[in-house]
Image (cartoon, rainbow, N blue to C red; front, side, top):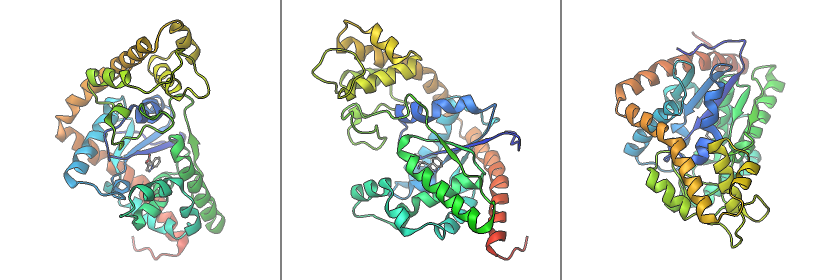
Length: 336
Ligand code: TRP
């Protein structure tokens, strides 16, 4: 079982089970997680409660929850060293989420760009959960007295709100929550769509050619990179206005560990076709072992359920402590 120590800093991150994870999720977040497991207390949560802010098919949600957990483990996160669990298995998240709703302003939530984007996309289902999504996310983070939150840049605004909520609560009730810091990796933090390289690669994109998924076959990966939108120039160089090429260089550099400059030199005098093929191959090769491990794990439901159970019990014990402290400070009566 993961050792949770007061001497270590705590890292928390959440991933939605709402779609097949992309190389954007992998390079921007999950791939970096394994580096932390010895030095930090690490919690990674499959956020099924966040997922239902947009309509989900129940069978698919269930399947993807298992898959997301299996994928975390397949990417190198050891469930003995990290707390890997499912949000709805720890009721403290929803409870603290409610409390934090009462310490978050309507105006603050109205300014969240993700809310505006998702409302535009789901115009017939602008539900209250979509609006208060960031307070549940704040609860996820604050329950564990988190120091560091690795997130993609698109989640930075939610993290800033989390900090504001924590500071507000602390200023009214005295030190209660650790105020968390974002951790945004330099490269690969923001992988763009292969079809519209000015937009983030999104796991829910309707155009499958825009998105490379961690579990895509080698053939699919190569094909998608071949079709990636570039520009009418012919030079593999990172530059303003070359969003497609910049994105491919970022992906190549993240998978190979080479710097952008090294990659530029490698492809000097070569065409976009050669470059795209090399990016596809680097990506497929790096993901092959992840996929093999995933296939093994997903066939072993009993193991995944044992991980869910033991890790959520451990998460619960930590979360419960913070929640009790909050409830005491608020003036809730305590009978246990
Ligand atoms: N909102 C995050 C996303 O869509 C997922 C998430 C939920 C999360 N709770 C979190 C991320 C807490 C970091 C910390 O990517």
